[in-house]
Length: 344
Ligand SMILES: [Zn+2]
Image (tube, rainbow, N blue to C red; front, side):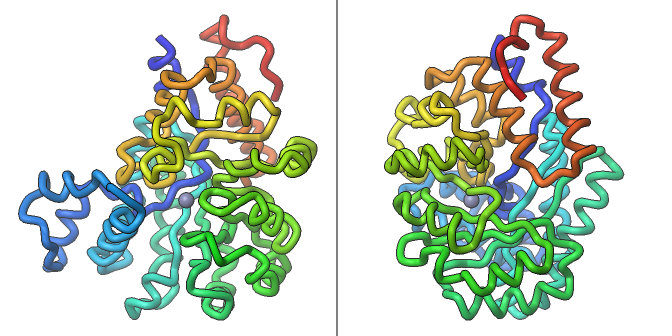
């Protein structure tokens, strides 16, 4: 019953890396189309390698995905495959990560990524009514100079960029290292976000807030280790994009039943559920929500609250947020028992 309710519910996604939506089949087909030799002999063999034992194996597969993409059209196609999934899952607004640095290092210009994502978003709006935008991240373990170089490459295209974040290896690379570049990003009118408090401690979340002035935190689950931070996050309602299946796959929690999302919700944090790398973790947004509902104490009310949090935490225009809330409200009105005691 709850499963059906979640499947059909209108949704907003705020944390999804586009290469992480490449199913084994897509990767396989692109590799063959582009004559890129991979070490797997069949789709099934490749699929089996999607079951990661550790972070390194995950990163290797993620990078393989980037290597089989050889043209703007390939990347556009990968985006459109994700948008088709959004239609299936009733994801009506989505804000998508895709870093330019990897492709720049392969020898492509920054427009390769920027135009592919921008074009895909235009077609997603025209074909499916899906809104959202493109959010490249600086790859933090490459350091501050590379981040500055990335910004120099991207700034001429700032109108096509919704937000800029920080991704990849967290420990050892606090947001404070990127303070100067993010000041320029903010001055250009681009939203600032950062992966923080996933593998690194709560201090990194403080640094994201104080040093680069984030408007949203990706993950942020380790905020619970610092009471003062939790208080601050509750007061400011700074959104945290939690990715449950990613956390389990990367062994931050051994089982979904151990996930701290119920506690985060109970404390009044502005949390919402997202998929991170849905093909790699074998769970798109719907499956992440269902898994939380089935394996933790989060109730239907909690799921609805988080759907509202995702709308509020998005960078959609005021008008679009109103529409998204109205679509959700309409849906809930057809499920009367679920619509009480949840604040917007
Ligand atoms: Zn992520």
